[in-house]
Image (cartoon, rainbow, N blue to C red):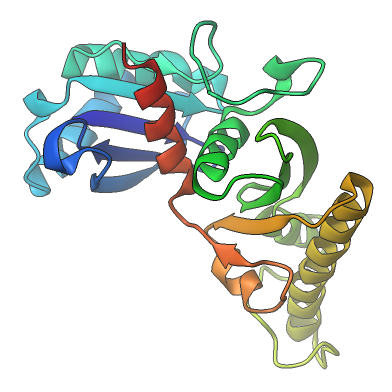
Amino acid sequence: MLLAIDSGNTNVVFAVFGADGPNAGKVLGEWRSSTAANRTADEFGVWLLRVLEMAGIEPTQISHAIIATVVPANLFALTQLCVKYFNATPLVVGEAGVALGIGIKLANPAEIGADRLVNAVAAVESYGGPLICIDFGTATTFDVIDADGDYAGGAIAPGINLSLEALHMAAAKLPRVAVERPAKVIGTDTISAMQSGIYWGYVAMIEGLVKRIQDEYGAPMKIIATGGLAGMFAKATDVIERTDKDITLRGLYAIFKRNRS
């Protein structure tokens, strides 16, 4: 079995894949933990062993591991977790020698977040290029894959929850509000006005950025969305063609397959 770890700014996602036989490539279990840069390998390990037990997965069956992280401070603890608890030296996305299977048309590929590369790998494998992959995470990212299946760049905007928190922190009279689709664009009180600005403002940003990217690229592109809020925003605009909540995990598995030898 393969332990795949996607360490983001907000959550760390752990997933176990079948690596061989009829379960090869199948997600056998998936769990989330909050990201904390000071969490130790033992803290991760004790928690993970417990959830594996609850899922009926024997830890000794895990013989491979792969990590993608955008939180460098977490890498040591997660690597030690794999070695100490599963006797598996992990592949680390972005490290020298780890093949992605796609080209990167940027001057400094090391600057690209591991999560964006993993999404790109899965997007190319599942849909082919050209396409834009929009990831609704701590940041909202727009990643561009060209017709050759190579990573061509993109855009990064503040995430929805980050923007809401900034409004609350910077303006004394603005409360914290939940992200949801308001009944009307014109808010009639503070909360509905904030929800409208965030929700419809993000819809407008999505539509505007996608159009500008396509105009600059010079050809139609598939638009794929992922992340926790992808479904909510996909319902509000025809720009997003489909949502794919498992694209990051599939990307990790695809990279593992390419580097297994």
